[in-house]
Image (cartoon, rainbow, N blue to C red; front, side, top):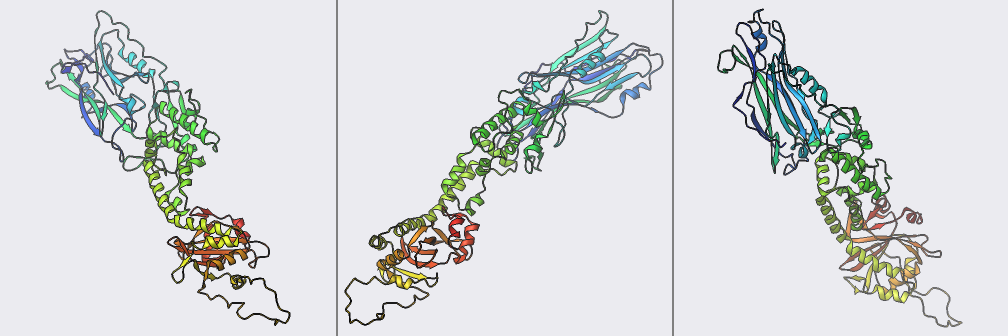
Length: 614
């Protein structure tokens, strides 16, 4: 609050009341105001005070000192005191030009009337301003005025009554209680409808006085340090002449204080370190927060809906339309800021507004979920692209996260992207082998199959063009598929009838046999494969993926030696397939793995494909 200062004398001796009788007089004397500075720091997790962190309001309060001086002095008065009405008052003039806010308020009122001990001393705790965001609140200016009279036509008590009726802004603190707040758009709902009545001109013979001065700045901040300045007026009762403050009859009544108070949120509770906590709420719940104004109480959602701001948002947009939701998010942010809400309250409201949108949930997906669901970088980038950038800045996400809300900041996304790319690199060899193997299996030409397979397979025993073949699918005639077709030749009429020795090989052992590219091409061609799934990493016994083995499902055509189809496992090393095994689709709980992890390594197998195998 930037307030001009006008120098004054060391002690302002203002004749507040003149009670005459036996040459005895009494005065209310106010000392020159003193200022005490109190420091405040940025909230935990923030490096500086930017004016959007806090709300500030000004409070006036009288602190009585010692016994009731006025009442004690009254005991020494004699019935001969018969003077007229006497009064004194200190009145504040509070204004903020940027917010078009202005009001007057009474610091204290002293009034004495004819007779013995007929006086009042009225000092109430006053909220001089509603809550104002700190960046706007520092512009608030405060002047103070002393009015005193004795036998005067100036009715100070009447003036005070007019001031008290001019505005009545309530400001209560705490979650669930009404708050009064003022911002750029507040004039439509928080305003003082009356002006203080001007004081009439005093009579020529009246004994009266008045003083007007300005208080120093109440709040300042820069970088990591902020200052709250408390101004204190010492108020004295002076008897028997009174102007000599060192006299034995000078007693302090108390101190009139005007001080700023700051809070980081009006809508949320706060944690032990002072940071607002926005967890476990909903848009409806936060929308019911009561707001108090001179016109009565209204809840936050009504306040927004009744706003005359040109960017008034639609609080019920089409939640499936990203652009519409993002546009109304932007409008909501503007209205909340112009109404005077700070970054914590604004972003809490915005978070729960967006919580009904699917793209918002995708953008704030957890890192654990991206890893457990094996999301590909392209999917993650598509989520990140819808970042509500036309509404929210990077700092807004930092604020939301500081309040305990599950959002992703830029650093979170960078880490997820890096982890996703590293994960994707693990699948790169698998996807390369998959593409080559699928190309072979989809080739209807057996001779071309052989040529494609030769550089793709290899074993340590036989070298390139060979592979270890295993069968765990059951007896479907795999051995017969390995026999090369006999060349067409005329059969002599006297040739013996019966099988030729060695034409039907023995059953393939469990450890498998090494076959050539030509034999493997015969197997693939003879299976009559109709459909292929994508390849997934083979899950190990702990549910994790092995890095050098993949598995795909195949569906066969009618007439295939293997009805319906099965699974084909392939192991590779150095870009070469070293082992191929025919498996059941339940191998290593593969079917359950499809349910637990629908997509892994960029491969998602539809349940309908699996159903064709049963």
